[in-house]
Length: 462
Length: 164
Image (cartoon, rainbow over the protein chains, first blue to last red):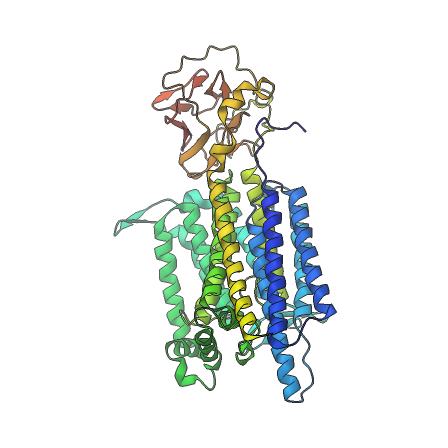
């Protein structure tokens, strides 16, 4: 390999330093929980801390060898968010155990070790993505295969034998004693499908037929894909009772359509369909109406269906600006504190100051994803990177907005933080793909093909 | 653990979180500036070994505009708008072929449409026998032509610009 005249810095050193920093923050967090709750630290906990460090190092080394020019910030930020999640899950385990001891109840199984296992699996898949997908453009060849598998995964929870309903939402698949949310993987496959599909079709979708209110609207016959996406997301809502996935799926499609065609009319049309869907759902589905009513006035329902959100708000209030401190709040008062409501638990213990730092990390992560989309040099990569970043952005907005009572609550997991394997795995695959694309975007192009041999003249695409 | 120690640790933890965010932002800022700083073009041309292929025998038109060399090629219009391709000595190929440096997805571009390479301290555009031509401002180029900084270079429905 020849070395380029002026070497483009790979910035892998920066990444390593930031990763070590993230890990140290995690160690301090665990120690703090131990000191504040009087639990101390066990050998098992130290092993967990070591394993987390080793996993982070494994990811770094993989990136160093397979995607040397990849973005240096995405991986440390992701890792820190995951570590914060692990610390908080551990902290909730501690409080659950202490409560069990007070009530003479049997000790609950701690979740943090299960989450560690999921993290390990996620890291293995992250490495697999970087090793197997050497060039993201190859994914474009399997556009329709991915689309088909994505749709199948989306409806799989409805299948009679494997599908399971948990807490009213049918989004689980139980097989061989393991349960998994296939919707999480479906969102990645569908993003690849949308990117591949829109790259090919965007020219006709960008055609303008009628002008209305200063916006160019597409031809009626090009509305098909949008309507199909709308119907599928309504179907997910009706049959799987899953508001979050439904919104994520439709929002993703509309934003990618907008990015592909640069026509604001798609946003207007998509927004209109969303409003129609939302009104229909409100009128015909009791659980949607309940969600909206709890959102408007949780205090009326404070003892039953609004209990979660009210406790979450109390948590934020108790945390205040600087937080109660890790190990010093009452996060176990919120049901599902370590999954849907982990942000509420974090908000209580690290306060607004910590929460804003965390939101900034999400912002930086998404900014890096969109920056990758801008700088990569092929349309498919652009759409894919933008779509994957938007998936993350929508999830963060929908769940944190729900927990803080900005919008009605929907069940989505907080990326990287929440307890839950499917979500962690899917989001690490997303980061793997984004790093792959950013490596391509930032790599200096030293191996330009010999042009003289390939002087072809193509008149028009078939 | 005393109350004071716990408070200090609590604030320390928040400070560390923010330090992480600020360092990240600092890295990010340096990263945004980096393409211009890291590839000084002066050192580039002085190293003959890595210079791209010598231009063809055809006569290169005299430079029309300033002799200031650009360091990046920016896509200003078309589906790839916003893309910045740093010029680092190697040639840049433009076309529909997937192995081009800038892959243009456009019915009006040829597979191997044009290339941009450096020669004698300037960047030169050469049309590679495209169907619809390569245009600098309003002229269709027929021979390798020096690309002035800031002039619009049109390939299909995409407009590129050489920037300092």
